[in-house]
Image (cartoon, rainbow, N blue to C red; front, top):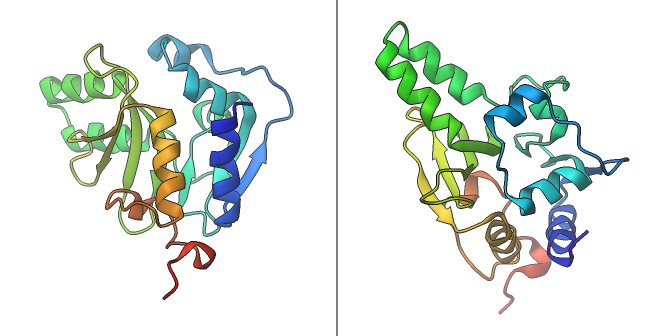
Length: 186
């Protein structure tokens, strides 16, 4: 496991997240998933290879892992729930449904939050911004903004934000308040 992934996991554990390591080192993602997302960045694949589950203590924020993508968890949310909601809202409008599917083909959800509103982090898989991390939220899930350039940048931002060294209005939906041991003292 890389030092940066180890540091990221340690920061989540310090913030009282529930992190379960995977027992094996071989991913077994379903064929349909891999056909839809054939070019997942290596940094995120490393995360999936080592982590079995990763959620905050309240279970209102979680990173998606192999079992989520394979739909073998008992979670009330599917990994692609926001796409499903958008498709349901599009009804029979085939042009809109096609645009929604195209969007999600190029945006792989990696973290979901129901902490204050439905929100997500995703990896952009389009050629233009390949590997970048974007975020979106209800009700217009397909209107996303870029957060950072890579999964590694995301983990560094989360570490920095959780220690109070940096602020991120986006991550408030994904992280607990600054830990008391890291808060500035007068």
